[in-house]
Length: 299
Length: 312
Image 1 (cartoon, each protein chain N blue to C red):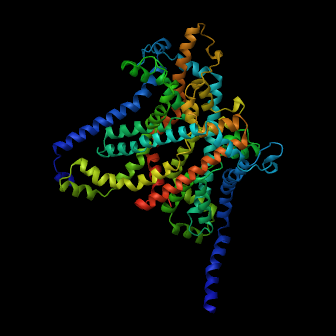
Image 2 (cartoon, chains in turn red, green):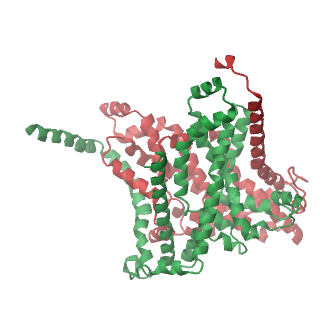
Image 3 (cartoon, rainbow over the protein chains, first blue to last red):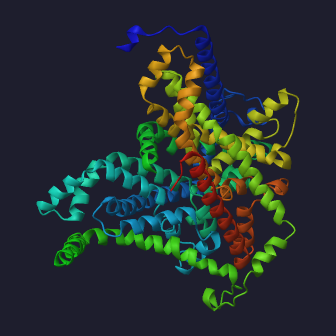
């Protein structure tokens, strides 16, 4: 190979490469340290956290914060709600995206340019918050589970990515051959297009699912009943507005200890709430990078 | 002449026939189109509310027209320039720092051959992208908690002790922008890494033969090959200048930093949905969208003239 005849790196180049390594190591630390700090704090004793003893490693290991998180009924309800919105919402998202992207990928589909223009317009201009809110209100979706699913049932960007994928990886000849054999379009999508599109479906599922799991804005404006709240709203109440229900710390008598546990709870909660996405992420990272690249081809 | 008639007939027939043959595709696309109309186009039509005196009982169409009254009210409000200044200030600051950051990371990663170190840097720097806004703001807050958080302890070592960083108006922009850089640089680099991977290896080989140093190679090969994709991303970013992320700013706001943290999107939410002034709020939202659209179209035009790269 070419490596055999490699030209030796000059001194300047080796110095430069060393600086690059140093730079990337600093970046790595800057990104990782705050996360490690939170992880360590979540398993340290409340006293150690409040008095600022925790730097990188846990001090006086304890799982009290996690116990408080799992004993909290509100958090449990939020977790289940988020799970529901994520699963149902993502299924609807992926179905609708394919239903729109596949016909648009077919050159023979009459009117596809018109629909593409319709799509692109929505990316550049929108009615703004108030008219959007009023549509949801007039459809009587306010304070229902549907408000978390229907208004965002489709992301135009994902449609364009999926369309590019279908255009480049499902040959027209395949559709023609299937047609000659008497295969209907819906059957073709179901038994040929879907199995051939696993990578793009994986990427879409991940992107949509992360979006639903992290959704906060829709819940803030559309939901009123606490039993419909997704996890993010409950997190905001506890983590940012600092309103912890005192009943969750019923076993702790002292005010000071309560304050300590309240702080500890925050760290544990951050870990618990981010866990699902961060655990899945390394497994789908490959697909994910691929998806971003597919999207960038002709975006 | 009969030939011509015949030809048009030949062209037309298959279009109609193919529509008939592929009726199922039209059935399939119906549902998503319905979604687009209801949740994208009906709200666009709903913008008329900005020119009306909206009254809940009379509805949008029954309410009286008031022309530009609400726009005037916004332009003349004492805080108009403050909100514009905050919106543009945070946006431009973010662009200045946030736009080159992923390019630099991608260039640095590109210098390193595939290996465990490269993979770990990528894995770790992408990860914050998946953190929700609520959690992100919580991470900012706990890390900045006086005497407890990691960052505040770091500043304490430098002599800045016991400071409530979130309550200092002058720091809001920096906290917002740099935490965004922390969260999104790794993700943003993916697209540039992909572009660098597409560079013809022969270019590097011949550069090596010519005795080019690594820095010369970056300047003469890497950066030029990133220009098309970065121009496109720059247009998109500039076209979003007024659409500043509502969620993060709203969550980071507190009574102490409002003078620098109130932007148009948070103001629209507060006035419109919390204060129920639908028409006034819709007018501000429309003003914002129009500025945005003008920016997008003009930046695209300029980019096309200057570099032949454009969105359309």
